[in-house]
Amino acid sequence: MTKKGPHHHGNLQEALIDAGLALLRESGQTGLTLRKAAARAGVSHAAPAHHFNGLSGLRNAIARRGFEMLLESLRAAERENGNDSQPDPFKRLTVRLQAYLKFCDENEPLFRLMFAEATHADPELKRIAMDCYRILHKSCRPFTNGRNTLEVEHAVWTMAHGYAVMRMNNPRPNAPAPTPPFENLLRLLLLPPDPDR
Image 1 (cartoon, rainbow, N blue to C red):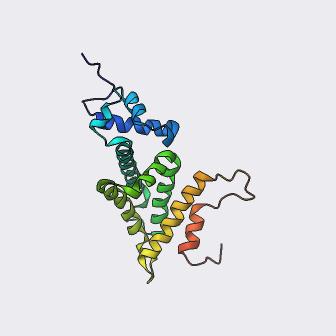
Image 2 (tube, rainbow, N blue to C red):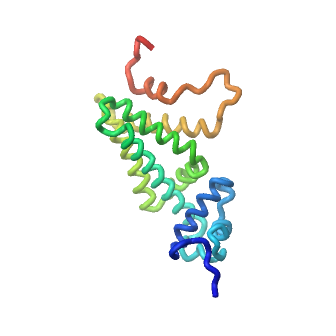
């Protein structure tokens, strides 16, 4: 009789994705292999072949899960204090981008894998990533003021994504001054100068 692994209700694909996420958290991308994911899920090393087209298939599935998690984080931020009933559009945008930065901080190895996989993603991964981007698109609309909408979105996205990556890659322990708060930089980008600041 075959010994059952720790996955439940026969959902081996989800169990392997969960195992891959755990390996990412513990060891980063170098620690993620099909063999280790199978061992973590309690199945034979050949079992993942029935669900994924090699390691790239597992990585793609984990990236999809990551974008689903990010989308839920962004929607939760909207529900809690940044939804469309918030009268201040700058506050709405800031809340959503702070949720993005928080997700990056808390899921660094997953974040790196998500954007590595997004460059050659399957249609489902692209769809979920675009759902995340639409939240940014909606939040940037009030700041176009006759400017090219796409350029405003790209400027905001570049700042948020770049800020997250810089913080991950270079914590600046010996910097002469701390990194300015993200909200201050966003204010410089989008709002007219405040004479009282």
